[in-house]
Length: 617
Ligand code: ASP
Image (cartoon, rainbow, N blue to C red; front, side, top):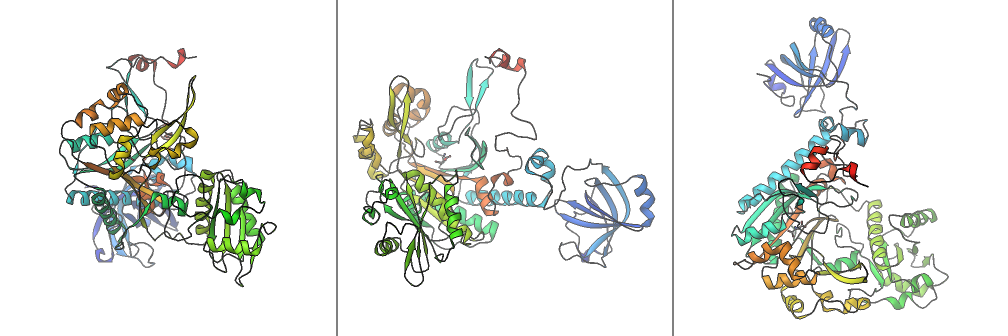
């Protein structure tokens, strides 16, 4: 028997028992003739006391940090108790010990606040994983996964595996490809998600499917993305949007309960994509706090039904606003007394390259009702008050205004909103707010350079090509020709107004899941592929299997996938998904521990019919 107990298990009630423990040496402290050692394993730390009688043996076989040690001894009450750890009332009076393995001096301390930098810890990930913070993260990940599986199992979902060596599944990223030795010159693609397989499973009659599954996307790595990541991937047949929303709010609420002991009893908020963009500047608003935006100048895009305040800002010869495509305001509550230094800092903040604005206009709505702004030269107090009122500011508030090209300004103000809320302590880590964002546009307009033909405007699927339009928008899709003839006026094309039967679940400003009701009729799917620029031949070549399946009794279906790593990170109160993955890649997509990707030898290349790097120009 290697051990009778773990290092986290023994209490005062065990006093007098003879036990055997095994673990890693965390610290060694010598006091005269006695030695204290903290022995660590996954379950905790137990103090060991080596009395004088063991000194000779300790000298002959000295111990070091991270040595693997087995000890046998008696549990006894400590005189000097440590109430910081659960085993702090006891220690083990060691009778005998054995070094099971030595350790080189670790390159960083295996402690909660280690001295190791990021790169070093990634290189020695197996040591980093010994530390409590990472162990807790992996435990949380396991708990989230288990909770999800339990819920889905109880709801009659079946976990069905789907292949990794497949053909492309378009989710908007590049594919990772794998050369096939047995099929000269041909390649598999790794799935960007199991999307088409889960739909085929619906055709096969497995009406509730799930899988906790790896997905692979060869994207330029933005901060905190991983080229391989895990989804909780789900699909259901015979459902409408409402069924899906209910089922999967249930899933997240269950995870909250099991993992965080939070009873999320309130109704999950819902918002249209258009409102999210209009009121918060992005499609995944953090609604733990209010601070809605005011669109002072309505841009010429999709916000057809919305109010226009441009008369308030235009017409006083303030070029910045006159020439801007959009002017957006956000109100910082209670900040009218910000100093010059503070407003300057905010201006610098929006000018950072990541935010990319040229400047910031502020209006202070003083508590005495007067108004002062950085553009007093142009706007008299009445105008300022009208702007303040439109922004729903109150005396005591500070109004911040950005102007410029629509997309950039919208992005910038939504970042500014979060930045302000952060500095005002309004984004509480222990508060969780869910939000469904609905009614996304089905298509996005994109421009593409075609060799010899110049630039053409075309439609791309905002979610993916299998997403169905809202039921009452299907006819718009069927009846209209997708070709964009008037590029400058693409918004007038009927396809611009088609809404998708899609939904994203947002938690505290992060998209944690997204999905849609799917197309299940061949004709509509062909129309969709055609709208995306695929001719019949390409459709057949790429998706013949799916179009074929739709001819054999495909049921109405829909689904969703949750970003498992991200969900864990949010529940764990962290910004970084890497901390919740046992063996992640770094920001350049490298595994620095394995030193992968790496080169392969000539023989392997030949077998795969790939020209060797040496022969390449
Ligand atoms: N396959 C989609 C994705 O990975 C999710 C879904 O539509 O179910 O985003």
